[in-house]
Length: 114
Image (cartoon, rainbow, N blue to C red):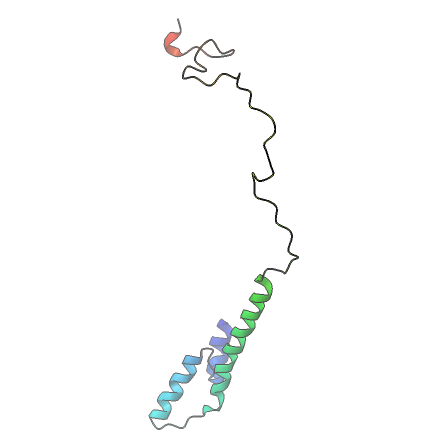
């Protein structure tokens, strides 16, 4: 891109931006200069065709592929009655849980050391 702008642009007088082509043509025509409007459609059609081709390529790459519809699985919890029972003999957690007794391998806090 930089080589097209810096090397070829000054030699041919071409531009890569349609606005850059249209503006000088319009001003030269208003000012009474000799202008050739025959090249303008190439500057307009090129970006339009490129944009359509890019959109088609993106759509071809990014569109999800068609697939065979499968029978949906039933919602969770709708398979019927729950089998089994909850063991009610298990004691519930208490506030003092884990504080009674010594833990094997536990280090003595610094303030309790002799």
